[in-house]
Image (tube, rainbow, N blue to C red; front, top):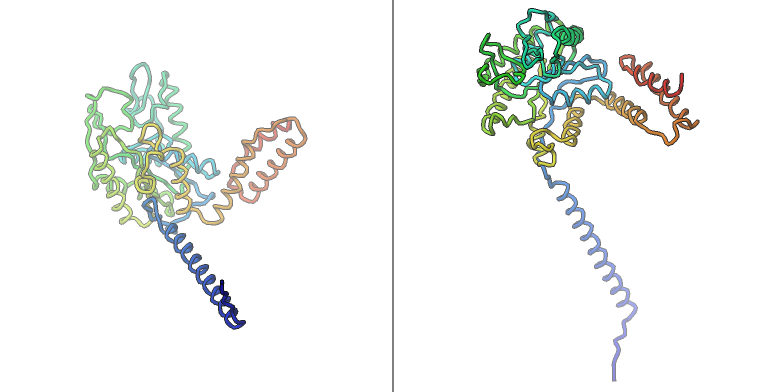
Length: 373
C-alpha cells in the first residue's frame, strides 16, 4: 500500500519560492561566469602591442609632404598619394642609408641641376647611371638620363621650398663608398664589389649629418616637421647579426636626433612589424618584405598617430570616390551608369570646392571621357 505525502498550502508556497531562489541564483552565477570568461578573452592578447605616439603632431591634406628613404617610404607615400595628400616621394628613387638620404635632401634643397660633367654620372654596361639615383633612372642615352633626373629634381626642389612634413625612412647603417673619389653611393648599379669600400656608420656621424640637414630645411621653412622611421625590412645580405647591429645604430641615432630637435618625431614601423606582426603570414614570399596585409596594418597605425577626425572623414570620402572609379558596370552605355558617373563627378567637384588643395582633375577628366563630354 503506497502512501503519499500531501503538502500544505504553506509548504507548497515555501517550496516554490525555494525553487525560484535556486533558479535565479544559478542564472546569476551563469551570467557572471560568462561575463568573466568574455572579460578574460578580451584581456587575452595574441600579439605584443606597440604603443603609438599619438597626439605628437598632425598631418593634413593641406600639408606639402616629402618622403625619402627605403621602399617602405614608397609604401607609405603611395598610400598618402592615393588619399590625395600632396606628396613628393623618393625623387631620386629608393635610398637606404642615412648619408645617401641626407645627400638627396641637400641636393633637393639647393636645386643644383646635374650636367654633362657631373661626377655622379658614369657609363656601365652600355647604360648611363647616377650613383645618387635608383636604377630606374638609368638610360642608354646620357642626355635622356640628365633630362629625367633634373626634371625630378626640379619638382622636388619646388616641394622643398614649401615642405611642411618630411618623412625619412632609414633602411641600413651600412654604406658603400666609391674608391675612386670616396663618395658614398646611393646605388652601386652592379659595379664590381672591388670598386667600393663597405663600412657601418656610427651614431654620431648620422646625428651630425642630419643636424645640418634639419637646420638647412628650417632655414627654408621654420615650421617644417620631420617624422623618422626605421624600415621594418631586414637587410639579410648583412647577415642576421649585422642587420640587428645596423637597425640598432639607426634607432639610437634617431633617438638622439629627436632629443636635439623639437620638430622631429618617430613612428615605430619597425616595432609594429617585428612585435605586433611577428608571424610569417605578414611577410611577402621572400620572407623579408612586409605583405600587403602588413603594409595596410602599418598604414592604419600611421593614421591613428597623425590624422585627426577631420582628416579621417575626408579620407573616407576619397576612398568612396576611389571605389566608384574602380567600379566596372555590366553595361557601360546604360542610363544608370551615366547617372552614376555624373553623381561621382559632382561629388569630386564638391570635394574640390570645399577642399581646394585636393586634385581630382585626372579623375574628373576620366569620368567626362566616359560620358562623352
